[in-house]
Length: 344
Image (tube, rainbow, N blue to C red; front, top):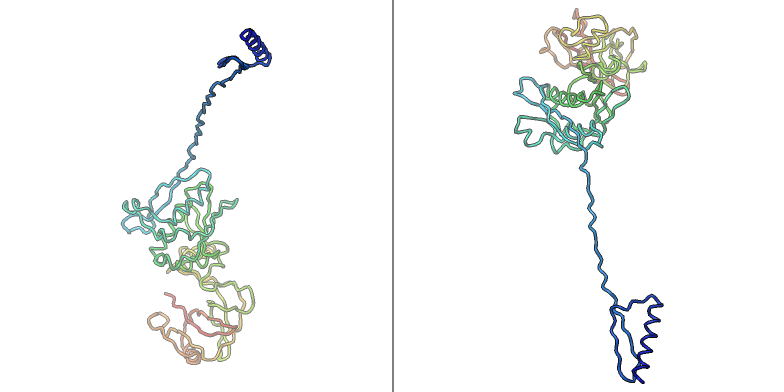
């Protein structure tokens, strides 16, 4: 009877399990006399498979540009050679070019014969590089005069300017190039012992109005009274107390060529200078006490130049047939020094 009862219990449990959606496999059944049969269900093992995800990074698109460094045996100071540099296509190529230029040539390029005033020590000297809608590229430097001191020689300046302009004009959109130190064209070119210039693909031209690039303080003071500075002109009359001064424009180098051409005169002018004197204004400038004058006893011989006191100069100059032009140094509205200009 016990076995028959147990059989019925098992059947009932099987029906319950089936009705609940259970699984009979695998099962372990224990059937002991005097006990109710129990069923233990063992869950099947679960296997998890991880599929690796592979991420593909596309290589950055690269472009090529050229920087130009000094090259050759030195017989032509402006000779340069181009060396390629690669850069990311998302970068501004003109800015990259000048950043690469001021970093100087690599060891391999130096071994090839490249030379430059720029090096790893000057890698951060570019303040800005801008290109306007008219194709004028302006390159502004920090004060590089001490770090590139040899660039101020005649050959050195030719080499430096050739490297700058050659690097700039590889870009078709660049029509003109202007270079400055801390925003000043005059500071940059005075350091190179030149007039303030801008460059086209045909060569150098005076930047702006030609009169703006007369030597020293120029010839356009903008006021009736001469500001502090060094001004060229001619003495119309002189007394112990004052000089009546005819301000003129003294040009040298490329500025002299352009001024002479504008005036319909021989250009380049003889002896690399040109004087423009088209303003009839006379200025009376008071003379400070104790002024000295560097004058030319023999106006045809620059080796005769000597410094005398102002009163002696007044007396001596009257005996000469030719009166050269004079540079007046003005300080606080007074003449504090004068220097006669030799001309061949």
